Length: 599
Image 1: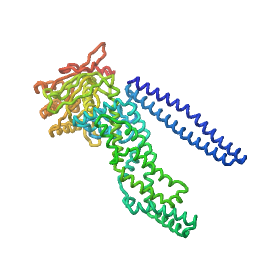
Image 2: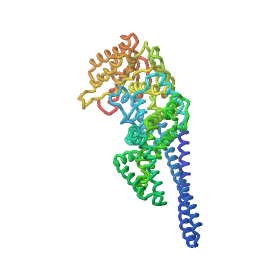
Image 3: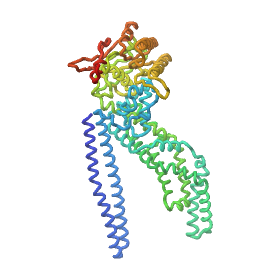
Image 4: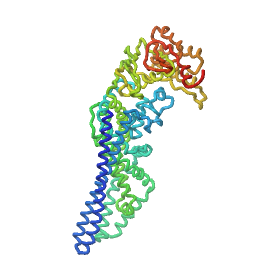
């Protein structure tokens, strides 16, 4: 994959340089045409060859406008190739683990008090969102965040998403073009929300049959009267002036509100033209997976008209609204009732397409979200596609050689199983041995499974469960609550979900570390037994080695695992490999001395 991204980046950089070389000759040609037009005009005019002079000047200016269009196309092409080179450069950084410097980490989309997001680095700094985010619009960012925070709970829907992600992972050009077009959109959410609201609020006056008939026919009658009156003197001259007066009165009625109505669409015109590019990308590509086919089909209206065509129609009307800035617009508007013509056309567009505008934005977001997730599959084809167990299955989780996705090549892999006979694992070990990382490894791979992504494992199967964590607990100064009490509230939330009949998988890191050893030991035993008794499964990490008795007390339903370290010439070494049984090593004193503190 590294080679592929490198080659694509080099290819687009080369194309950008080639485009840059084409710009200067076009500029020179435009300049030469202008100079030629001036010289020929003077020479031919002085020679009295007026018709030839006019014909040559027209021909030269046609050539100039052609070159001008060509100039714009080359600049657009150069911009596109530069952006595609940058997209591949970032993809290469992502593949090599340099993604932590990417600006958008989705922190603004995080959910307070979420059951696992902050503990598993799902959104925020150094997060799953920051790693995979390829969204260029607010709808895409929001769709991706929603998928990560509230994944599907039904295996059928997850498998449908897996198929879509599998298909998109192979379509590199489509994914990168989508990223390109959405980036050019530079979507201002507030502006687009204003556009959606505009599209959904009807203006009944401009839809009335008699109003439409009046607006369409009155200017025609007025123009005919001008031709028959002042020009041909067939009818009295006061008739066209009377009709123009009536049209002026009509234009004076509710002028301010009508201007605001037209201004709202005029401000969106540039964005509409770029939105056309995004929709065109989605329309051109046909898909085989049911989810992608369904999303694409939702884009079409009842008449099955292409969304891009509908947006082009709206953009054309918006462009005609922009004529209001022309100095001669008053006369143009007076003769044709142009403001009213635009209002009627806009309402006609709303009737046909307005209700679909919000859906288009959401579908763009859905494609962006799926495209972002699919890059995991593309970058890591060797990772396992998880399978799903029925809720009645004996197996809860079966993870073979599972590693932490965000650690990439640095991750050490381990295997573990959870089933109805052994639903809970108690993990002991000394400081820095890997207990917390392993809990997060299982947790984040479960999220991968639930969003349809591959997992960092050789083999992975699981049931669909509610994931709840209690790991990074801190004091809440605003609520005047200690970290210990915050932990109690968090664990109560998990117990409540279990008692409500939810299938819960929990991760408890250093349980009740904020209190004395005697209370911690008693409270931890009570909580773990409670969770086991009520049918929950999960993992608990602890320094409290005395909790090893839980395996015996639970008749083996709670199994002991541990991580350990070794010492070599006053150096500490961690292998981060999970082993059965209880830890027999401690390293706190060693680490204190290693930090230079005398003991």
